[in-house]
Image (cartoon, rainbow, N blue to C red; front, side, top):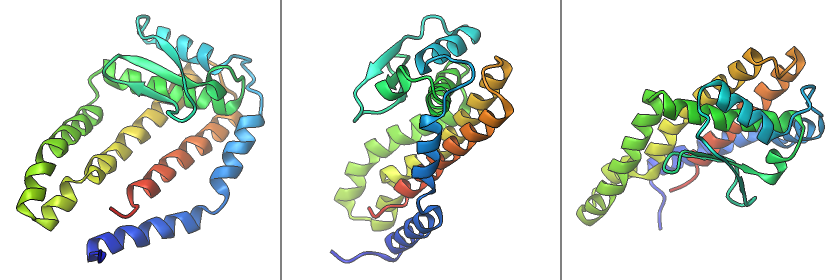
Length: 200
């Protein structure tokens, strides 16, 4: 099947970002994943402390299979952490755990970026069948899941900003750790952008 001009732009964008990032994501994650956190808490303990600090005592923290990864589930109102994050006492673990709590706080405060993304995702699912049957390539492109993914970038960035702010306000990180965690979360967002730009 021939690739369209719009699809080609996405492909070029993904390749360009991947080339700029190089081995940086692996290096950043590897370093943060082997650096002990000064607070000495596990990812689970940090998540619980941050959730409680924001009055989210009823939000549970659940272990997750590695292939499903760390995430916040809006349907069950629960934070899910992989074993590498949940039980580790590293800079990476507390950064990722705080990021997922950031999503929980977004949900609890009815953050508009999170709501908009949810709405777009719902609309995308509803309209894709109609659009495909009508064979309208341009609309089909913009109702593709990549629309939702593009909007999700703002949500991810906001969750990362919240994560750093929460960790600092609770006195759980040093200045050096803050920079390391910011690097990890920035790499995460860039990786997300790269996935979003992959071919349809």
